[in-house]
Length: 284
Image (cartoon, rainbow, N blue to C red):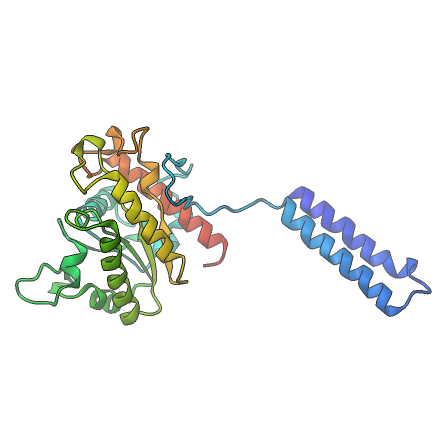
């Protein structure tokens, strides 16, 4: 930063003295020199200023653990980003809800939650009925897209795919997810939607069709989908939780299957807060 300021000041001094050395030249010649020096000032500032990197770090088909952001789970600087937010998902999100409640009032700005154990995309896409498995919101069973619109939330964070991958291909699961996203956007067009990539399975817990390879294919499909719309973002948490075998690390897994320990949810929070810091710096 200091180098940037010094370079900018030096260039501006040159600009201020330029008229003294341009006597006898045309206005056009002087404008060309001013333009060139202004470009130098801008380029210098861009090269020497502190870079801001997105904390997503998702690379299609790439299998290796990404670094966990070095950020305090109680980093209140990023709390405003989560104000007026709603988190939606299955038992993984239910676990996150309980984790946030344990951390205390005001943690992550106390967002709303719509969760249900074993909840799947297939459940949410079915018509509402007395026997349907739609979650309750404000004491009433309702479609998720209606709940989001009714909540008035500005940001929606969702995690799905784990329950749907049993019996469906990654592509079929992604297609269902896209349908739900479309419904939410149609009902609440001003809402920004953040897709939390599916987290992975403890290696010995994999089943036919329900594998870490297929979950990665599903994440690849969702990552690509999110690139097409300015109201969508993909958040890569799963790659921070895997070991050398590409499966969920033991210290992050509570049941040798897919569910999280407190330490696993600590990683969730660090990634979410780092992601929030990136967008807050961009003024979003």
